Length: 365
Image (tube, rainbow, N blue to C red; front, side, top):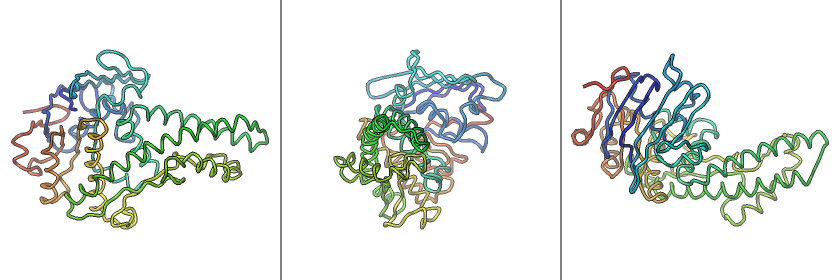
């Protein structure tokens, strides 16, 4: 999969941008705050329908403008598509080949991307909600049904939480509550199944990748649900039993305490939690290894590679690690890299790449 052409109108600091990409390596160079990262954000937005940054959609609309538009020509093995997202104060409109797509779940998957940027360190350091958001987005790109199941689960979860508060006030319709609980468990089992598949897929590759880029092995991703998911056939019964055991506590809290909405996962290096014991360098390389391991997971599930977006990757790495990462950039993967200096990138890669110099929201010679 690749993005052949990107067009921006009133996106961030771009009034108009029209850029065509090489099917292999593309390098976007420029000083800080000129708009390099905004191009990667726009591609991610075109894929996921939202920014990779924790911002409101409206902040992506250029100052003093009423709308913003992102368009991209996408090629996969046997298909070509034109994707478009139009944003204004009323929301956003998604379209594929000129046809409006009402549901985001029907849109996501037309362009699959993996993005790495320096802020990804928060994936390890911040709250579990960030890690759940990450895993939900990645799985949604791989499996079209997942986002629908997740949305339905969140709706039932909200209804069940609201009814727990009703029960606390003394009004009980046990049949209604049991129906909500049964549906919650049914949807939860599917979510657990998808998450297990994804993390198992990552663990097939992540240690090998980490060893290649760092020289050390022992990296794994540990799934941390609050029910035993070691046997998918038993999850339904285990979750039902745990919800019964937690019934009084849930009424007291007014909240559902068991289920995938409370999942977490951790990064382990030689069985040590990187959050507690990892150095800044180890954490950054572990996240990069996770993102690079995803490349092969996407290929295994979808039959083709995603587009790889690397924001300012090389600036903080020594020459040895840069050269090891370059081995991945030489594969049949469209890669778009931002940098402030071409000296950060191997000269042999530079020769074969498309290079775009960005200055104040414009491509310059």
